[in-house]
Amino acid sequence: MLTLSSGQTLQGSAATASVITYTLTGSSYVPGSSTYEILGQGQLSGSVAAMVSPSGDSVLISHILLANTSASSVSISLYVDGAAGSNLIVTLNIPANGSATFDRDGWKVYDVNGSLQTVGSPGASGPTGPSGASGAPGASGAAGIAGASGATGPSGGPTGATGPTGATGPTGAGVTGATGGTGPAGSAGAVGVTGATGPTGSTGPTGAGVTGATGPTGVAGPTGAGVTGATGPTGPTGVGATGATGVTGATGSSGTNAVGTARNTSALPATAAADEFTILTGSTASKTLTLPTTPANGTINATLNNSTVNVTLAPGGSDSLVLLGAASASIIIPPNGYYEIVYVTSTTTWYVITGSQEREQLRVGSTASSATPAIDTDSYDIYDITALAATITGFTMTGTPMDADKLIVRITDNAAARGITWGASFEASPGCALPATTVISTMLTVAFIYNGATSKWRCVASDAAAGSPQINELGINTVAPTVAGTVATVPPTTATITTSLGALTLGTAYQNTLSYDVQHTVYLAITVNTSLVLKDGVGTTTTPTQTTIITGTTALGIVSIKVRIPAGQYRLLSATGTVTESIVGQYLEAA
Image 1 (cartoon, rainbow, N blue to C red):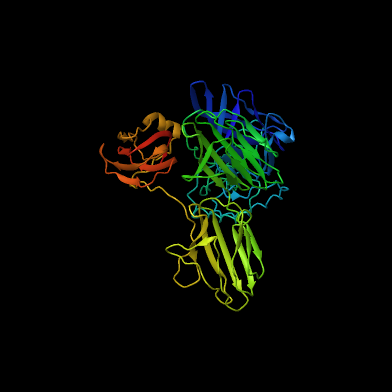
Image 2 (tube, rainbow, N blue to C red):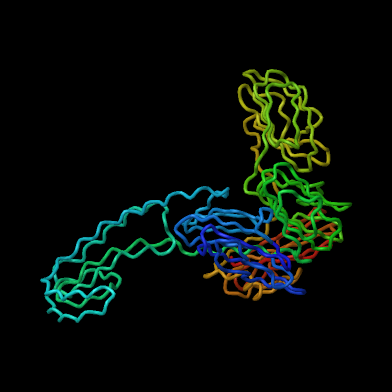
């Protein structure tokens, strides 16, 4: 997402003018209201020009679609408030008749067939692929006796006098020639606009033979007495159909709308401004960004890290930071990662709303044989000990791990079993003991999760013996009721559904009055929790059977609960116990 305040402008240019069509969608804000709409459409020119500028207080651009209508790849650049290098947001190379999209998951580039491409620095345009060979023309049916041809009038000139129509002879015995097989498809070449139609054969005089397959109407010559001319082969169909509209992004949590500064920089400031969207690019050293201290309730800060280094987000003053229901001193955004957080004044706490990255980039370190291996957990996620020729008497652990951090240790001996003493920084769990020896000439893999309560690395998986647990990615999922239903024939927009159904209230049955199913997501903020019991249910009455989805925890934060509501049915979401909760956002989409 990209926020522009009043007076700011999103600008762009293309290496080839008037071939890149852009469509910007999102919300425009004026005091007291917001409107989700198309914010701008047009084509990029060859020089930097405005694409959208807020007409009210601000706009929040949630989706950008760029479509290349030309037969060649085209490089584009987007800027905020100027065409200098410091204003550059992104430079992309869009394939011939391909497209590019931007939403909360970042940029994605697709080729003419809709296949996702790797996003990187624009490369030189490849040569246009050769066109697929045309299929062999089908054999013509046997021609009847040709009448005398009328003189062909000049192309584009006035129609010549129509010759008398030859007498229709009996139908020839030749059936319509079989259509030649389609030639093999060439590699993606110049596609997009409909391929040029093969030249239409001039209409010859009507003869007595069977009529050949009708092609597109050619320039009419005078009607003669001969047979109809063979139909010219149809040119290949262009594949450059308009790309499908991306799914509308989820509605953000309610509160103060993000109307702050959009910042694109290679050098982070010491402290972020309230309601700021920061894109970090081109940096060569790790950065730390301190969040504003005690901002207004609902303040949202987001950071998109397009650089090659880590970005650390840390709360300012006495504010707290909560990630996955647990307090955290800071969060680290790896290269190509993204985090969005919101501030709640009643708890003076920043809560992580969402975070993503293109792929998990684990940091791997290693050492040769050592009796006292040293592992810095701030620098490595996986640590290899190779050719171990001595008994390990203990590990030296450094770094400042956070609760639920993960570490994998892999040990390979030098063809002789070696004993392992893990030391005071590690602990076993009920389901996984700490391995006491290596397996001869076989890599021993042991997985740990940091236990903040004991300040130890807790063993959760080991392949030391057959039948031991496998290493799995651990996480927390809220499971809501699952029901069957009916898919909408034509997916409507989120704005249309929201207008029709309105918003859910806790403890009150909420009906889907539409003729198709909807997916309904509720974002619930828990600020006080002694004995929360959260239940959800879907059914045909106003009192559907509910399932308990959260109980037995005192965690605070924001939880999202998503269910499918079939057409005509009801959803009932309720929270009981000693708890203070509020719905801070809802999102509806066609199922």
